[in-house]
Amino acid sequence: MNEFGLIARYFDWPAPAGWLGVGDDAALVPLTADRELAVSVDMMIEGRHFFADADPGCLARKALAVNLSDMAAMGAEPKWFTLSLALPEIDVDWLGSFSLGLREMADEYGVVLVGGDTTRGPLAISIQIAGEVPAGQALLRSGGKPGDDVWVSGPLGAAAAAVMHRLGRVELPPKLRGQCEIRLDLPVPRVQLGVRLRGLASAALDISDGLVADLGHICERSGCGAEIMLPEVPYPRELDCLPETLLEEAILAGGDDYELCFTAPAASRSRIEALGLDLGMALARIGSLTEGDGVRVCREDGLRLELARAGFDHFS
Ligand code: ADP
Ligand code: MG
Image (tube, rainbow, N blue to C red):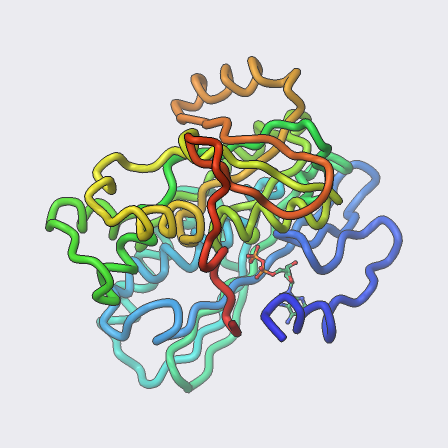
């Protein structure tokens, strides 16, 4: 059983009519006739998501960023969050930097810390976030249709390359290493883009497990397949120094970039391009949804690429 099989077997409980339960980037709960509450939670554990010596200010920013990213993926406006902390000891320097980083990030995105829980234990950080979206306008994973374009909001692979370096799988030159580590340690949640994609995108999610795996979630929930054109998938050209298989793995199976992947009817192309210009973002059209199921990746020569691993799974 993998991570998703486990959730499906034990926790995929039916939600009341008009709610959206387990299976998307956030749950949706009706608030008023015209507003819905979007709720999501993400946990970061030492040794699993970060190393023991990680900078506490960065950790705080990232813990909030990955939650803001789930709001972005829903097209929701983030409003407030709660913070659960397990700490091995009271370290005032650590706590000072952590709370400052958290405060700065919260202020930047206009979200308010309204509660939490603190306990002693191995270092773990869990943030639950809530946002609002006009009723019926959230971006779901399930709205894609065969023929829709598949888009990503920016270059992929840098964060995965930083992980590869930290694990000793590659040796990045110092400048590139710095560039990749910023993407890994300080992901930028695409909140504004998410909000602006309401009414434009047919489906969306944030890429946290890898493009192929995450697009696979859109396919499953939308009841279709997808074809990605590898040469169209944006990545930092500096990564061309990686061996080809590692480069492909970083781009297609690397999580942690927290770009959005979204689909939209071909008729929306010019509006999406205009939106990209307006936001100063290089939105890239990388393929399309198809009939059938599963995600296929095509190389330039038209040949299909077989991936050794599609994405990150905590239990595989
Ligand atoms: P994301 O990558 O957007 O954070 P995940 O891949 O972690 O989403 O989770 C997939 C879906 O399963 C989400 O809708 C999430 O809310 C749900 N989920 C994960 N773990 C549990 C759990 N223990 N109980 C209920 N739902 C869960
Ligand atoms: Mg998500």
